[in-house]
Amino acid sequence: MKILLIIPAYNEEANILNTYNTIMEYNKKNKTNYDAIVINDGSIDNTKEILKKNKIPHINLINNLGIGGAVQTGYKYAFENDYDVAVQYDGDGQHDVRYVKDLVANLEKGYDMVIGSRFIEEKSDFKSTKMRRVGINIISFFIKLFTGKKIYDTTSGFRACNRNLIEKFSISYPTEYPEPISTVEALKMNYKVSEVAVEMNERQAGKSSIHSWKNIYYMINVILSILVVGTRRYK
Image (cartoon, rainbow, N blue to C red; front, top):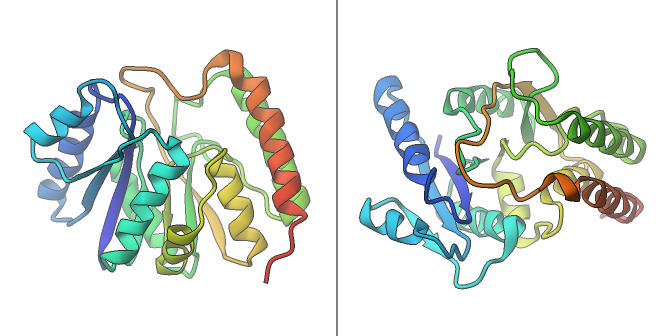
């Protein structure tokens, strides 16, 4: 089975080398063969130079496309290079490579997408701020309202997709609020989605793309997007 870790990165000079090296060290210790591709999303810091100097496989985007565009680039790469599984994996050190095997194991049970969740078991001490957890619960309510499926960690960017969804996402992937919206789209098109418990870490350095002052704005716009996607007809 060919497994690719898609690592979107924007201004991750402080994190990206350690993130990549951790994956490669895990491969050596556990005799796994996870490939990784960093999608450098128009970084304006030294991310590009670090990737080049350390010969880390990467794609440089000329302009900043945002997380959705960067991740879709990774799915295009995965599809064109015949990967069986694509795993979205943050470049900031939050995701733990040990849990990739659990995501993949659930795909092998017949699921199309498996989301790494902080909330279905008490594995992870890091669960984000209280305000953001409130927003996640509200988003979860609306996802269930329109799809019938309860998703607990709606904003988790740690997720694995099989070949069917790799192809779908290589063609079309949400540019705005991609994690919850792509989940809704997958469920509305009758793809099978599940969650597995994972442990996550706090960002090692740099800033998140979602700042505290944007949380309410983010939540309102996600809900509006879910309303649009949730009422759309799919073939």
